[in-house]
Amino acid sequence: MRKINILATSFLTILLMASCGEYNKVLNKGTTQDQYKLGVKKYEAKEYSKALRLFEKATPDYRGKPQMERIQFMVAQSNFNEKNYTLSGYYFERFTQNYPRSSKKEEAAFLSAYSYKLASPVYTLDQTDTNKALVSFQNFINEFPNSSRIEEANNHYKELQFKLEKKAFEIGKNYYRTAIMDFRNYKSAIVVFDNLISDYLGTRLKEEALYYRLKSFHDLALVSIDEVKGDRLKDAIAAYEKLKRNFPTSKFSKESEKMLAKIKDEQKQLVKS
Image 1 (tube, helix red, strand yellow):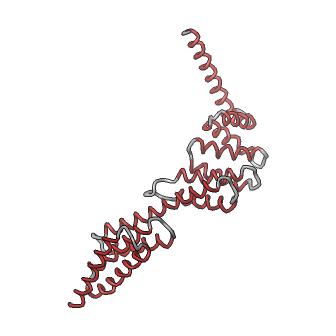
Image 2: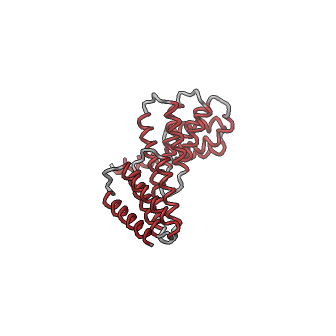
Image 3: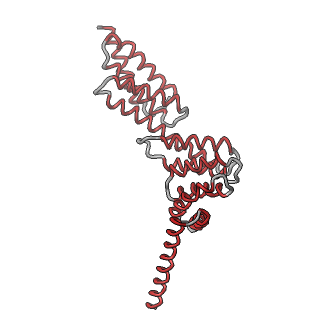
């Protein structure tokens, strides 16, 4: 049994060496036709990194030829399978543009958007790929409204949009937190929360955004000089009323009522002074 295992291992090693030898020979000295054929073979064998190198060599001679449609799709799919998601998003997008009548256009359009989604980082980082994914999913939804993937596309879109909402919300909160060192940040926080609410209608962060908006108005009014304090106290009351109007039974009602009481007390003190 041990001899059989040794022989089997040796045979596999020889096959592997032969395969590597063939790959290197075709990659470096083969004709573009040989590179294309071996590229397809490696792609079908799920050796995607090798397939990509072979297609890269063969592509210049196949531009404008029927095989190019297949090559472009395999290049995009290979990058996707290798988890090069930004690249696969780009190549699938190019495929849809170059072959608008292809039977694989719908699949490529979805995978382009999905690739950008997988490339999308956590909300604290740059959201370029998130925005690309949102545009791509919206284009997919518009162009293929009857697709079997439409529900999945909509779910991905909502998930990506919430990431942008979360990023905006955290920026607003950070302005609020740092306003104790720079009072101007209260105004910046208010602007961010206003934009969040207007840009993302129906956001699930609306209640909390309105609450922090109220806190920003409230705290800004308290640190203001008398010349502007009266107007800012009125703005804070309006912020309270907006929260109350949108969320009559808000989970922040207790804290909001305390702020309202403080605002009214400050108004009374201002009249006396």
